[in-house]
Length: 288
Image (cartoon, rainbow, N blue to C red; front, side):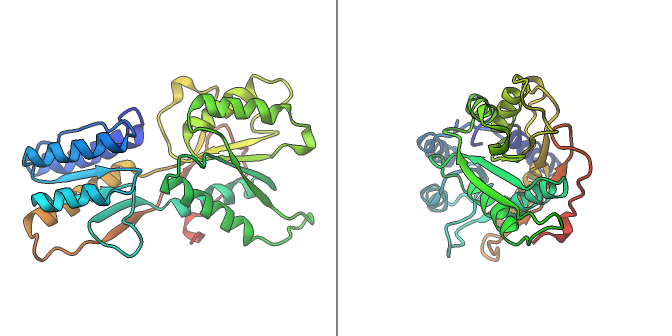
């Protein structure tokens, strides 16, 4: 797992474990703690253990780790990160993060918001965050002048990090802006950022969430204990990603010579809570 503290990866584990138990297999979890070097060492260690297969949930390009497993004869399935462009060295199971960005932008527009901010961090060049920005910005660019004569806009702002404290710092900055300069809707690239942002805005008497600023998180992490209010999210399908990944791994384990690698993209879902106003209504089926 990339980071066991993030509930997306524990949800992926739970989905994979269901399938393992149905097939008499045991699932071992290892925590890379978002470190490329630790991840690679763990892959090498699993290969030395002669495991039957590896599910690699990674935010990094992992060509070397795939090559290590291939050389050891251990089937490997990638989760949450696609193969480099033009390669199909392993099966991959991913959330459709472009669609996630589109869904978040569409929901904010449906709530009447027109001045949007995408809050991410360029130093952490994670594929999922890039794709979420692409989806949100593409959706906004496709919109025309609305009936009020306004043109929706979205800006990409570097939060200088992806944790709760980074979101809180950005919330303080946004709250200090003149009212006419603030965004009226924010898409936070991670739920940690969203929670920190909402906490800061709620601490400031000048800003109301969601009346003045609506906020959407992008993962569906289990952060109820640290948030000021229930967070609207585009929720990643972690359980289903784990189940799909384990089924693909079983197929390769049982018939390695005939197995064909494929990328499976799974749609997320919007979960409306208190940080966005009522009156949305995004239809995920209309997004592409």
